[in-house]
Length: 164
Ligand code: NI
Image 1 (cartoon, rainbow, N blue to C red):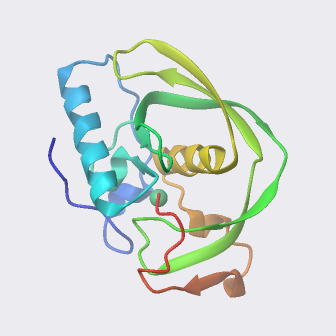
Image 2: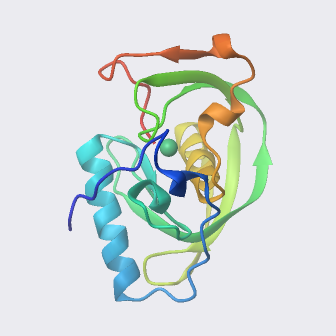
């Protein structure tokens, strides 16, 4: 496992690309997943998408507080319900937080680190993290969901909302 360099706005254009589907989950994808988990943990984040370390592939990892990390390959949201307002930050947009709307719950399907199909129903922070990471795979960042400039704030790095 190796901690990789983070890609950040404004310079890293990989964050704005649509990531490619993974054809098969092999050892190189599992190494990518392990490096993503190491990088997310080093950054103290609850989620990370492959484009955030410069790899334009559809792979995300999530780790909620006091839970084990897990990976999803080629994830897709198949259902969303409810709406709530959250304060959100992003490891690739350091120093900012915004008030945006996210779903209350989502159902996501994809593959696990062994290429086995999985389906996850998530609520709360897990649903928020999944929506955030899946946005990254389409080149979308939380700042795109901020409805007006006064809803985006500068924050100290210590006071950062859960990084994703
Ligand atoms: Ni992010």
